[in-house]
Image 1: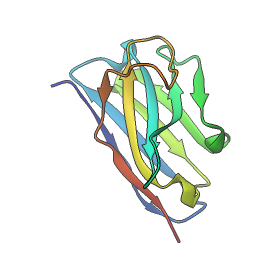
Image 2 (image 1 turned 30 degrees about the vertical axis):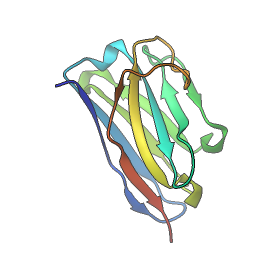
Image 3 (image 1 turned 90 degrees about the horizontal axis):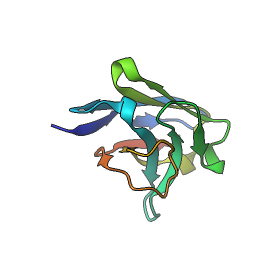
Image 4 (image 1 turned 90 degrees about the vertical axis):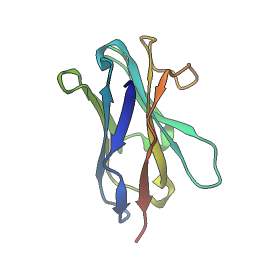
Length: 123
């Protein structure tokens, strides 16, 4: 089975923090760049943050700069999204995806997608 599984979502108050995990099974994440995307109610899916195959470069949305951090642990076949100072606008379903390209431009073809994990930011 080739799949990505997200976890770590939930309800958090504004200003709080969450860490999302994306674990791969059936393939090795070392060969892929990984992106995090989200979709809020009534909005289009958008790229949030991504990390290159080698982990040496990242791209991020301006709205999350300074608040979100992406990292990868190839030994655990897992990529993490650390979110802090969360805002209500961060609410949405968060997806991780893998692309065979070395970099992680949001517009590229992503070969594997997780089913998403819900993040709700509300007081």
